[in-house]
Each structure stands twice: as structure tokens, then as C-alpha cells.
Length: 346
Image (tube, rainbow, N blue to C red; front, side, top):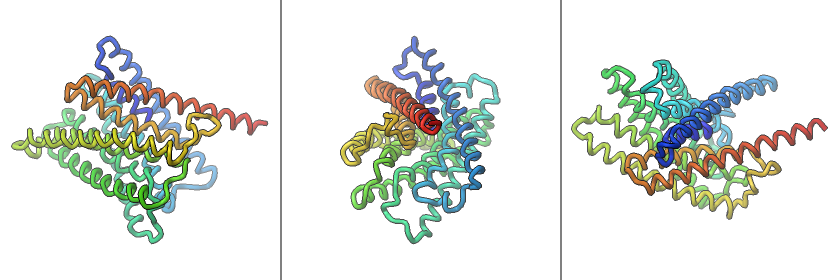
């Protein structure tokens, strides 16, 4: 998901430089392609590994407070790749089959994410042993993917017949409504845990960053609903767009604040070891990338809407940090794997 987010951010041309625009397009295409390949390889390797062990995701896995929500990263990867492709401009100027690809990825990703939210939360409501200690940032993953749906619907609005736009608008509102309310309720639970219960272990500390994902994606989804909502409320078009912009700005502001809070907690409270060191690398470090990527995309999008150079500069800083972060985590992961393989060979 994080790799595709870099692709989406690159297509927005951070800094709005005409000279660098072709470079950013090339970078965006490269990261989007890498994300698509990684999505296929990760899913395939996961399935193969489970078959070798005679395992398959069961009810206990899907409803686990720690593992269950992370299964939504697979449909999440599909939705974010679709988001990156739609950010490239090919829906407007490319072949029609790009629309088909984005539609399929978006529909499958959104439907699976909705199923994950239903299964996970219904089981959580029914469980007798769920406590505040079970609440963690991974709970935000499925609902974040759900809120990518309205963004894709808004971008596909012009590619389908006008008579279907009312249905698209209704679906966008439904997906945004379910996602944003689930976020508010889950955020309240996470705040309660951080204040009243034990904090996550150091290896799970990066999940604190995940809250930036629904905040940032929620801001983009709000803008999307403000756009397609004019079909449902033509007399309130300006008011709906204004309310959507205010909500998007509020969510973005809180996401920036949470970036500072989560970073401080990771350093002071959890005393997280250098996650970029191959010796201390943990796969959860990959969870640092998508939240910052979503925040970067949201920042650059709002900067364009507002015509605000200062916000654009913030977006550029986030983008640089995002790319550096990706390379640091990728190096640590590759070097850690190389060391394990060498140790096993010896």
C-alpha cells in the first residue's frame, strides 16, 4: 500500500514544477508498477506458504484483534494501486481498458474491505474476551480501504453513463459514512487504550502511525463526496462542497498533529530501536510508509485546491520524507533477509 501511495503522490507533481513534471510522472509510474508486482508476489507467496503448512485463514485468524484487520492490506493494496493509476491521468487520456482495470481493482478491494469490517466488528461485538489491550492501530486498516471507494467513484464518474451517476453518488455517501463513523468510534477506543491501558509493545509501535491513514484518506473521501454529492443535492452544491472542504481540512489538520504525537510516543514511550537497522528490523516497519504516503497525497491535493504555496511546501517535505523512508525500510528489509539466509546457510 505504501509503495502505491508514493506513486499517487508522485503523479501530483510535488512543488508543481513544470521542469520536474516528467520526472515525477516517471517516478510515479515506476512505484505504481513496483506496487502492482509486490501485490501479486506478496499474495502468491502468502498463499503458497499457507498451503505448505496445511493452513488457511480461518475464522479465528480473520477475527483476531491483532491479525484479523491486517488481512485487509490485500484488498487495500488493490484499492491503492487503483488510486495511483487514477492519479496518473490515464483515465482521461489513456485507453479505455485502464478504466476497466481501475474499476475492477476498486470494486474488489472495496467489497472485500467491507466484508472484513463486517466480520471483524460483528465478532468483536460478540466476543467476551476483547479488552482495551486488544485495541491497536491495525483496526484502522479495513475502514481506510472502505473510504478509498468514494475517491475512486468520483474519479470514475465521467467514464460511465450519466444515468448511473446517482447510483455512484449514493454509493460514495454510503461508503464515506460507514468509514468515517467507524473511524471516529475506533479512534475513541484507541485513545482510551493509550490513556487507560497498556501501550502496544515496541514491535507494534509503528501501528500508532496508522491513524494518519483514515484521517488523510477520509479528507480525500470528503472532497470526493462533495464533488459527486451535487448530483444528489443540486440546490446545495456550493454548500456541500464548502462543508466537504472544511471537513477535509479538519481531518488533515488532525493528521498532521497525530504525526507529531505518534512520532513522539514511539521515541519516548516505546523506546523503539532504530527500525532501519537490519539487526533490529521488524516487518511492522513497513506500516510506517502508507500513513505518511496518505498524508502526503492529502496535503498536495489540498494545496492544489487552495492554491497555497505554503501548504505545497509542506507537501514537498512530506514527499521527500516519504521517499527516504521507503528506501530506508526497503534496505533494512533486504539486508535483514540476506543476513538470515546467510546464517541459515552456515
